[in-house]
Length: 245
Image (cartoon, rainbow, N blue to C red; front, side):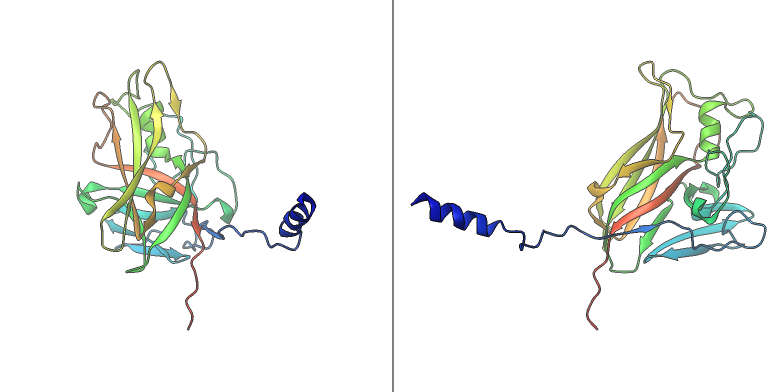
């Protein structure tokens, strides 16, 4: 009696069964963003935006001060303490090509206010599942952390810096948050993110907007305490379902 049951079991697991398909993904790479001739970012006077795969990265500009979400391709590793910090650059050695374009979430409190946060968003009422984002220190933050700026000292033992990504649904309610440690000098460590790092963002759930805030240890005297920036790239999302027309 056992043989027929075994045969039935083999039939149910035949090669004719279709495998279960996983989700399809799409990735924001910023490579299609166009810059004006001779520029290394998409900043224009008064502010602007860039859109890709349904996401909008908008910024405000006032007297060359920028706050919001910008696209850049400038890479620069700081080596001189007294050089002008570059908020719209990634702290990497420069390379060539559009594939090196990336986003920058930057806050300039004079432009957008102390309580605002740089963010990117989807259309009104739309919610998407962001799976991961590549994160890297801006040249500005890397300089502050590692070599300082004029009379401002770099990070010392016990210091740290964390960027928090927060999701919001279509009604503006928080959906979740993800902390990314950009630098950690606690417990004998001297860790500073120095390359693109893929960060899991699934804890945010379905979002209409993702904003970023930054905090650091009280003992660290950071220049321009209410201003900060972080670089992002390869925003990976579950592919949006097409609605029937």
